[in-house]
Length: 295
Length: 189
Image (cartoon, rainbow over the protein chains, first blue to last red):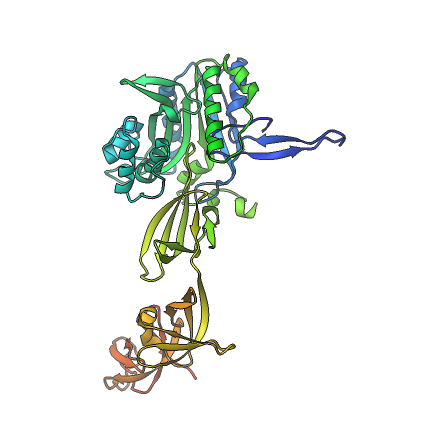
């Protein structure tokens, strides 16, 4: 849908479009195409909708490749009164049910972000220093990709996407595809999730789901503290400024509704990627009628 | 200096990496739902043929390699260098052993070859996919054997050794696939 504001995430760029009134005496106004239906859905939840879902086309700039199309489809839903652990169970059940007729699945796995790092590179992602992460990147032949001065989250993202993610959702003993849920990301990567204490460490109550080395979805135990959310948006905008990107106006409609958001958990699943797993195809273009190159 | 942004990456693009020219074999966008995007590429070293993986932050620029392919006619070998000529401009270029490499055994005077130039100098010589060469030496053929079931080595006029059917005789012209070093057929006039 069209919106006057958009997300501030420094690594997601929205499409912007111009609205021209029929009687052209008024100036044109700019609107964004949504990169996920999250903000308006949370406004509905805040208005008392209860649990809701939708399937929506979403749009993201610059994301084109084997696993990306700038226009793609999200199944997004929210569970009133649930936390992320309950929602992870439901995601696992749903994917299991949907995929079982098409592919043989291995045993599902649930692991924390910390466990994923410890298993592959024996470091604690919450406490490792930037120097330790830099040395780790070196070990995985990823030296020089990032400056030594880069934010430690960039190192975590590099290590996760190159050294951990490719093996997630593949059963080690059999090589079969399986559903793998990774939860409790670093608090600095909370986005719109609540931050909570786990074993003395502040972590984001956020999860992602992977099959055959590919991310299919992202979920949160939703933050409903407008003040904290505003501070995160502003921090995003400062990062955007440092990166030379345009700052985005904050979505005040969303922030105003957030105080009324009930305790809930939400998740979005990329349906093209789900179809890729179902049809066992390696390129997203094989599950889209008119991929970007032929749009 | 010319450079390419990661969003221009595609197969075949020539890049300078650690001082050597490389060609992109495969480009993959690695973009987490939340977080920094990377381009992971497989690149082939145009000097050694070795394929390696590299990762760049999306949006970064990488120096372009001044590499181009040109079709030239092979003239002769002077003992040290192989000489080629552009069929229209008659411009001549000499390539040494490191550029010619294994291609040497397929080079026959007058044949058109693809020369990969790096900063204007020959980097690689690629012979035509198919060449017609005369058999310089092989064991006497077995009369009447046309089955092609067996085989024997034959040394061609350029020095290349190819497995050929038993009925092939010295002096015959054969069509050879240079990519597989395999006999295709007798050359048809």
